[in-house]
Image (cartoon, rainbow, N blue to C red; front, side):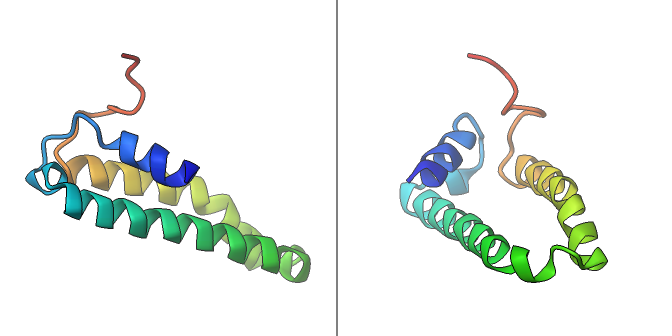
Length: 89
């Protein structure tokens, strides 16, 4: 629920016509939230087995960069202001 709520609020104020449609926004946010939960589960269940594997660790170190890239792409696709998530209201 927390992941869904925060993702829903992430796109408040964006100008995309896709996000104005509540069904499309709900579908997108639900899919993204499920992806986040599944990614956490994969990390949780693979950590003990692969925490000594260098490729695994390099991949995990890159996760912040992957997330930053995804946020920048979303800002473009959903017509948000640059750094809209950092602005205090």
